[in-house]
Image 1 (cartoon, one colour):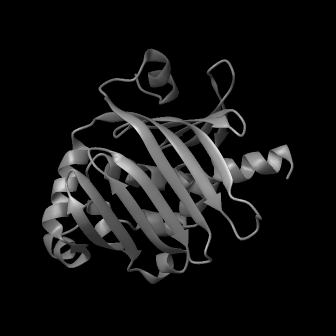
Image 2: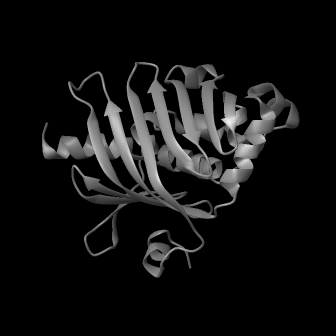
Length: 230
């Protein structure tokens, strides 16, 4: 596989973007930001544990972590593995730094997706419909990682098991337009999200394992600039 194709496949998967961006912008725009109590009770299995998980996740305003992403695709004979680090701030966005199999840095905010050059400057702003969808998904994922699970309830049936110290959640789409693309999501964690596995309807799987997660209260000046923060 050529270098450009490799970059495209790997970059398409960070934050499980290669998986989640299959959702259309129109579908994402219809996702409510707050679910009613009735919707939550109906969609969440073990709601008391889900509430505890949300409280644990919400304790961190921002998180730094290392990640290993493994993509198992029907079109590839071997899984594609990439590694790197990330910084996420619930109110600002996500910075993904890929170290292997190539080096690249991406910034995902509500405005869209940008690539960062070797001088630390945002040089490529992607405004296509698909990347706007990525930005919308990123916003939802940031809310989830920050402990706000309400955006999930109207689109997924949520089952949780374990304890607040070590939990597992299984999300199964309950909307046909999502189920056509995504079979399910599985999350494992404790104080932080430890792994995210997304299975597409066609059998392709993207798995993200997170390690050395640590809470961060403020980004560095350079990171603030990349995230477009004043």
